[in-house]
Each structure stands twice: as structure tokens, then as C-alpha cells.
Length: 307
Image 1 (tube, rainbow, N blue to C red):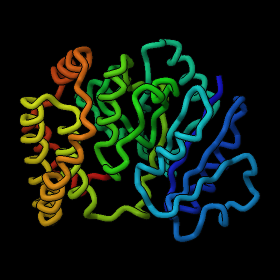
Image 2: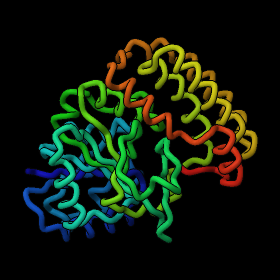
Image 3: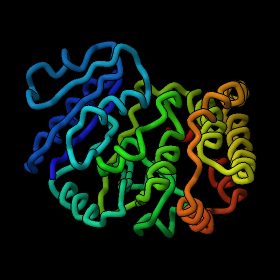
Image 4: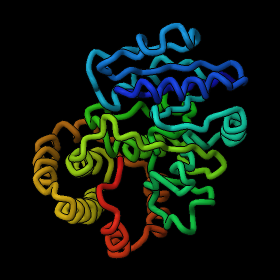
């Protein structure tokens, strides 16, 4: 089975060199590594030079967000495709073997990795399960950790790729719904552990409050039944309102609401009616969802949560 690793990078020359140095130690074959340079100020090609001759570098003409990840996936030829952010480390031969073993189950279309910070604490927990009791369990999820996940290529051939007009945020669950709609499952596995170094380069402070708010509308319009859309938007928008006021980004929440409403028609044109199996899976996942009030209380003390 051929493996492709697709890395999305923007203005992080030092990190991409470190990541490529790490990945170059992988002995598994056949393997291809593709770096998507999302229009960095200093091009990746000029930074790495001839140091990694086997690496393919795709240069975007502008920063197109998740569209860059789609560009890398589109040219990848592997049976399985790992997508990484440039500040994610930890993929080695041991991890590769575990990933391929997991995909021996033909129903699995994507595997989300366990992500920790440099201190070993759980990071990027986007799944609708209590972290404390589920971080060491394997489970079906309707979320995708975009920069720390592996896909079965044939799954993406059937489901399509990320909605590139989202730019960033909520493109993961959108793709997860489409993967479930074509008969595959997305799972979280604690067997594959990667470290997220949370580089601040390229991360604007306001972006969570704008994109997380705006894209909730579009995710709902493209995937949810109306009653579920109303319920999830009420909870999600309220949570983002609270966080934006707490952190001083209320204006960006308002802009996110306006942008979300303005783009609803365009988002709806890409709507995919959820399959019955998808609705059943989501219903089972929601049985484990932590109570809204408990999550708000917990996150009130975690300012400017990273995305």
C-alpha cells in the first residue's frame, strides 16, 4: 500500500525543515511527501533548497486556506493520505504501521490522531465526547482533526474533499458528514500520537471568533436537518458569543454572523442530504456530548482557544 503525506504550510520555514527532517527518517515504502506552500512570504522551495529531493512542493498563488490542503490531496497517489499541519510532529515508522493496521477495517474512511502539546497534555480536542474519559478510547466521531488525520484515498474519491470556501474552521465536520454519507466511518484512535507545537506564526488573534462563527451557518446549511441545525446553531453561536465578549472580539463575532448569513445561499447549493446511517451515528455521538453549561464553565478559563 502506498502512503502519501500532505503537509500544509504558511510562513513557517524553520518548522517545515524540522518536520521534513523527521519524516525523511521513515523507512516505509512506497512513500511520497507533498508540501503545499500556501503562498509563504519566503517560498518553501528557496528555504529547503536541494535538501529533500524526494519531496514535491506545490506553490499556491495566494493563501487559500484549506483549499491548499485539497490541492495536495488531489495530486497524492497513495492508497492512504496523511494530512499534517507544519507544526505537527510524530509520524514515524511505528505510527505508519499502526495506521495501516487500523485501516484493515474496510469501513474506516478516516483516522483522527491523538494530539498532545509538547508537555504531553491532550490538545486540539474537537470531538463531542468528554476528554477525561474518552481520550484513551477508540470511537466513531463526526469531527476531523485536519492537520493530524489519515484518509483512505478511495473514501475521498467518493465523498469529495474539504469545502474550500470555508477557508478555515468547520471544514472537518463538513467532510466527516460526507464520508459517513457514502458509507464509511471516521474514527479517533489514541494509538497514533502526534505533538502539536502551536506555532503562533500566521495565526491572527481574531480568526477563531470570525471563522468559527461564520462557518457554523454554512456547516448547518450543507449538512443538517432543519431542527438539528436550529439546535446546534443556537448552542454554538451562543458559546462563541460568550467567548468573544470574554476575549474582546465581539466585533468579529458580529462580522461572523453577518458573513454566515450572507453566504447561506451559496452554502446551501452544496447541500448533501444526510443519509439515514449518518443521522443514526450522529445521534449516538450526541448521547455522549458534555452538557453545554459544563463546557462553557470549563472554557471560560481557557482564553483564546487555538484553532
